[in-house]
Structures are given as structure tokens and as C-alpha cells.
Length: 278
Image (cartoon, rainbow, N blue to C red; front, side, top):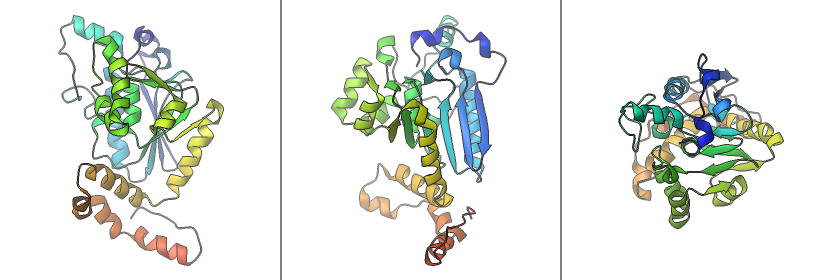
């Protein structure tokens, strides 16, 4: 979902990719690259993102992904409303909760079995579908000028990419309903107090802060990261006793790995472990 100024057109990016994708030193950098429309998400952007997430999850050399938006004004303001208005005029089916049957499915917001940790690097607006993308990440690191919100109700829409579900699970219900039913925005500091983000720093320090989180993540065994993420997300609905007894494929792989031997060995030998992900 995007605010009105994000619906002003995108001729500048018509001939290039909507998303930049790089891999460097075990990190996948995913940048929504439509700054002229505040990184609004059109269908082509969703298609490009889907191919990228497929590659991230399939590449064992990628240990962490960072999702961000180009420019200094927005992470993403969500759905490209100009495109949605055009599709409505053409009689395209209305959208609702979820993206099944739409370009880019499953989108990050519905990749419930994705085990690669994802950091949202947020600088500026994270509204509507942009906020929903951030909520689907494992960590959110934000600049102090960032603003979060789900304004769908003000536009005759719903937070169909999981915002209604995730916000109600990550905040006290009355607090979540206050934002969902009014479209009110929250500052980065307020999001931090609510526990929705992990760190808030001045914009000039954002990359240093993200680098610090990456250093900590990359110091961990990659199979442990995947196993922990898988276990947490696949057991949230289970009673505690059932969670202990559930099967976790990535944990079975970690348990039998060389990395599971390397960690205790490195500790006992007073050296840094060398992880190879096997």
C-alpha cells in the first residue's frame, strides 16, 4: 500500500530492474530501487523480489540477507497505487489477504518456511506494504527519521500482506488495533518502545549499526541460525511441550554437522571457530 505521492508514476525506472541484488561476503543485499516513487511496489517489483528470495534461500553461502530501499526518503511506501488504479480501470480482480495467484507469490510476507535470517534496514517511510515487508523480516534496524504505519483503512483497502496479522501478534491487541483501525503512524522511537524494531540510530550511523548486527550474525554458525529461525517460526502456534517434540529439518542437519563439532572444539582451544555450513 502506498501513500498518494508514491502513485505519481515511474517513467524513470521503466527500462531498468526494480530491485538491485548483490552478494558480498556471505551477505545478500536486496535493494528496492524505485526512489522516485518512494520505492513503491508494483507487480514487476514483486516478481523480481520473488526470484531473489528463491536464490537467497537456495544459496548456502548466503548466511544473512539485508532488505532496504534506495534513497534517503523511504524503505518502501508499499503498493504502487497508480498501478492499482489502472488495474481497477481494466477490471482486474480486487486483491485481499495474501498474494496467491499474483505475480511474485510467495512474497516475503508469505515465505513462512524461509530460514535465512533477513534484516530490514529502514531509512524513511515504511508504510503499508513496506511496513508489512519489514514486519516479515527477523530484525529491523531503523534510522531515527523513519516512520511506520498501515494506512490501508484510509484508502478503502486492508493490510493484505500480513500487517493485520503480524501487528496483532507483535503488539498488545488494543495497541495494534489502534494503528490498524486509524492508519496512524508511529515514529521510529515509538516503534522501538513497542518492541517492533531492534535498534534506532541517527541516519548517518545506520550503516555502521547494520554492520555491527551483521558482524554478530556472521560470527554465529550458519546452520544454527537457520535451525533457530525454523524452530521459532514453526512452533509459535504450538504448546510448549509440543514445541519440544516437533521435528525441525534444519536442526536435524545442524545436529549432525561438522559445525556442531567445530564450535565446542574452538571454545576449548581458545580460538575463533571456522564455520563452513556443513
